[in-house]
Length: 115
Image: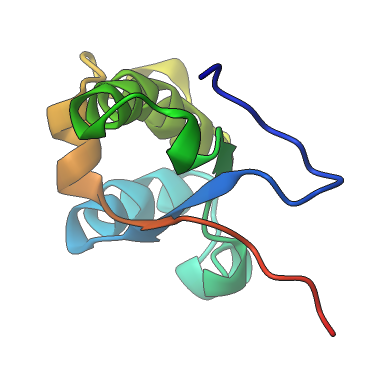
């Protein structure tokens, strides 16, 4: 079955990112350089939520896990980039392991319509 995202029919899954302590350890000095405080720019309601193909469209769990591992470096770049870091503030190597150290993940199989 082909991987599908159909937002009109709510045929997609979600990855929800929740920052870990290591994320805030990275963010605080970045913000200090820009003379901002954490409470001025970080809001939990803006934590990353990524739309991915519906879980049921993956052939098996290993295929889904590989998809998520391949996505993690992109998620790190996007999530850290939200805060406008200078190039020297970005991690040298952006890997799935780094992503796992910065974020907890929740995968949601589907989204429900409001009745």
